[in-house]
Image 1 (tube, rainbow, N blue to C red):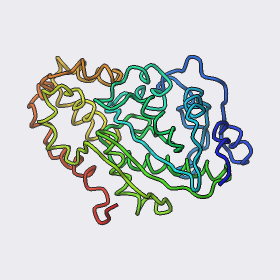
Image 2 (image 1 turned 45 degrees about the vertical axis):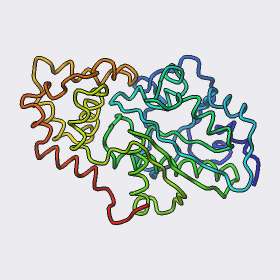
Image 3 (image 1 turned 90 degrees about the vertical axis):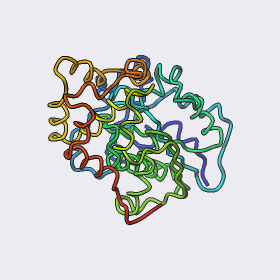
Length: 311
């Protein structure tokens, strides 16, 4: 297998490929949050591209330093791990692509597992190529499992494409996710045969999986992670205007702003703000509003996925 040193300059690889990929190797000093960063906007002509096509590449010096310090070099086929972080939020500025090179890399406790930066460093020390997609998409649609699965698979398509540009045609791929990241991972494993049959995924690992949203509502409400319920309701309706309109119509007017404030709260602050709160109290008819048929159908739609095939 050829050397993986080319991974240190993906911008050069993209330019050499002759493909229409926007590149930016300017060192990031003061990175803007995704909601304000032009790099997160779809470039002109994106509508004519295919799912998984690489549209932009930006150098990330923070991660390059971690790779250089690992001292590991794989032999045989390249090992690819797509790790889906559990950024359980409806705040796009908490996306991993930003968090890993910002303040969150130092402060995020990740619900008991190693912090983001040290966990990725350990993975890289094994000589793996590690992919961390923003699997909630450009609107941070937490709970929208179909979108998360597609985003994870499309990200892998992009990674495979980049590796092929570097001259590496052989690779083994695995996917892994915990909590909110397990939703994306499980969804990707379920949808892969029908959505991305060309991808060969050797293994899928999930932990803390929530596979029945409606059954989890009571468990999350009034808990230390009650804020996750708000993020879930806002996220799962992000791509569905009618369901979102219904959700907002059932909010108690006096506390509506407090509920929707979760849209602008970074994930590490969300838990503290809403810890042990009675989230049902934000709604006119309490928990019954969250079990209305229009929402129940949406929960079921996200849970069904591709039930005819199993990973």
